[in-house]
Image (cartoon, rainbow, N blue to C red):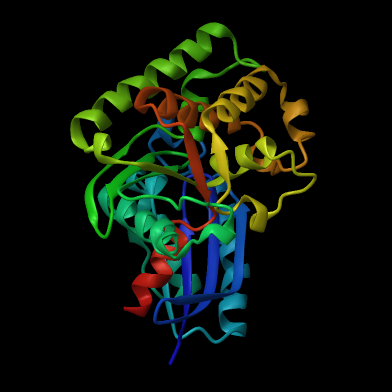
Length: 315
């Protein structure tokens, strides 16, 4: 017997919806949507959620509520992550969510965000076979890397999580902190890299990365980079999901992105317009992780914290 669930993930850059039927080890999508709302606009500078950012987010959520009602989901969970953890006026956000969905948003800790992302990303990896294009199969333990707008989560584990940390580097946060020019100047990129490397020092001290045999990359920066590496004419989730992107491909696409203007990035077929201004910083996080921890490739997953939220509702 299946349970129909609705999962809403509200991050720094986007708000997403998954309505699915969950039964046993099976999760069947009914709706999987994403809107870029930039909830975390200027949060790193002001410490508050901006009125226009809240309006954009609540407008998207009202559209999601209509779909949840249409599919008659039995249970809904709304999870909010980095931007709302950091905001002084997060109660205003919570009140709006409660009015729209009838449930309180859960402003999860970085550690819980990491566990949800790990569950969503790895639940299907063990079932991959040679026919999927992964002849050797992804080998645990995994390092799951979830690059968000405001924070990035690192989780190591196999059957269960062995270590996790959330660090305050993300595509939006790094761009707002350091980038003023288009394309970014060498000195701006040096500042971004220094911020990333300082965060990776914390990661190396906190999480048993040396145990990980497979790097799994999540979220829009990673999937967009994968679409570029695969030279897709349009964004194609089926081709991106569980694709293998080599370290060399990541480095090459990152170099391209960092040399492009905003207009150049908008012209990339797989680029969402709302991601074009921050994708360079997001790609640079993945680039530095591959270099720092000597992974030869990344397996890209379209399944992430949203799927983890859905699985949590079926338990």
